[in-house]
Length: 60
Image 1: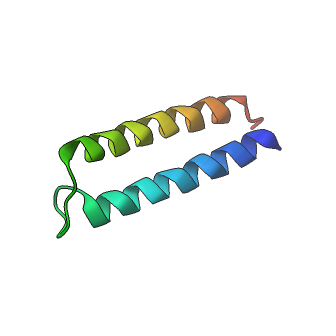
Image 2: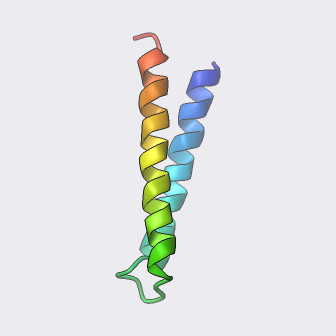
């Protein structure tokens, strides 16, 4: 089902963003500019919204 594929994609994207934050976030050994961290956190929030929308449409 397309909705399930979107949820799986969004979850994978979130994992990538969290890995980036762990490797390059403010507390890492190799921090990147604060704006990049803010962008990743914004992306995660948007992906959470996509997942919530999709789950609202997935039959229980």
